[in-house]
Image 1: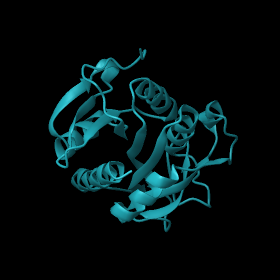
Image 2 (image 1 turned 135 degrees about the vertical axis):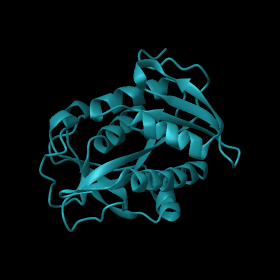
Image 3 (image 1 turned 180 degrees about the horizontal axis):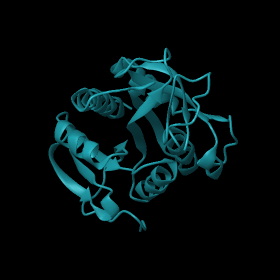
Image 4 (image 1 turned 45 degrees about the vertical axis):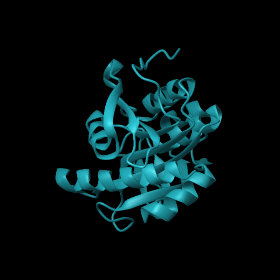
Amino acid sequence: MPRRLRPKTELAADAILVGDPGRSLLLAQELLVEPKMSNHARGLWGYTGRTPGGGELTIQTTGMGGPSAAVVLADLAKLGVRRVVRVGTCVAAGGRADLGELLLPNRAVAAGGSATAFGLDTGAEVKPDSELLNRLSEVSGARGTAVASVDALDSVIPSETAAADMQTVAILARARQLGIAAAALLIVSEVGDRRIDDEDLDAAARRAGQAAMRGLSNV
């Protein structure tokens, strides 16, 4: 049995991964019919239920940073999860992406730090599952681009990437080790000194969640 998650209900094979527990609740209310809390251990709120289309879906909090996300993903694999989409936020350098834009990482660059724990040297790339990527491209309207993953969001964003986050590399790399199909949809929440407001962020999260749900349901 997993060592961190303590599920109260059986999880779905498909899951949306969200760093913030408040956003997990938001998406559970948006995407699931009568969602049931499937985990609350360690503050890693998780919800499982049926989508309006009749499919089973789990929405699971991963916490902050790549190491936390990788640990949660390993527990999910033990519980039968086989496909995941990360719905999270990212920071963009000026001119590379617009505030509130949805980005679809087609490759994620390890920009140092804990990425070495997943077998990646600094500058190495990891790619999402191709089938999930293609499906998300069809349903999300998000721009496909390279992103970087860092341990601190005040790090310099590599010039070959549009934005940086703290989890995409970890999730894609650990998923590959676990034999899980994984991809990500990222919301640009910061551009330079500008930050998205809470209302616009929630709206973007709902759009990304809907796209992730549709992408998973057709793979």
